[in-house]
Image 1 (cartoon, rainbow, N blue to C red):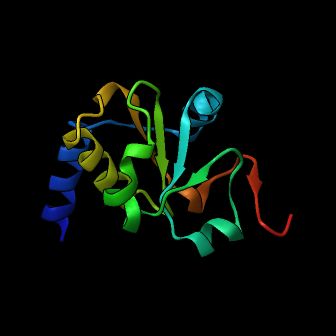
Image 2 (image 1 turned 90 degrees about the vertical axis):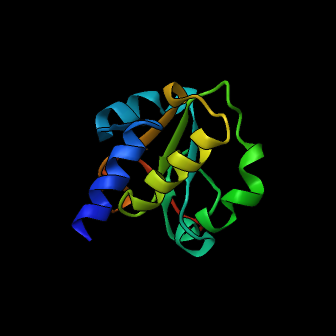
Image 3 (image 1 turned 45 degrees about the vertical axis):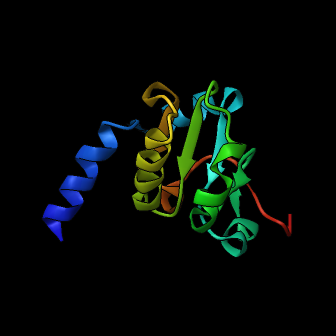
Length: 117
């Protein structure tokens, strides 16, 4: 398991940047913020300004993302985001435009929105 995770981390760093929450927050307004969790989790609460593109649908819907704008990815921890970054980079999205929230949504401290709010 550890070797596999390390390999994933190396591949991810070749496909994008893993950034701290503070940097993620400072770039939110000029990026496409993508929540990779399933819709029910997104509806329960998500980063303000994010749109939902579940990882399970990424292969079918990735063309909805603009390659010329920064793409900020997050999920509950960051594992799905790392896989998504690798996939997007393979599809031609530039590494310089792909960013992953290091701590994931589970430790997010910024503004959130939920369907009930």
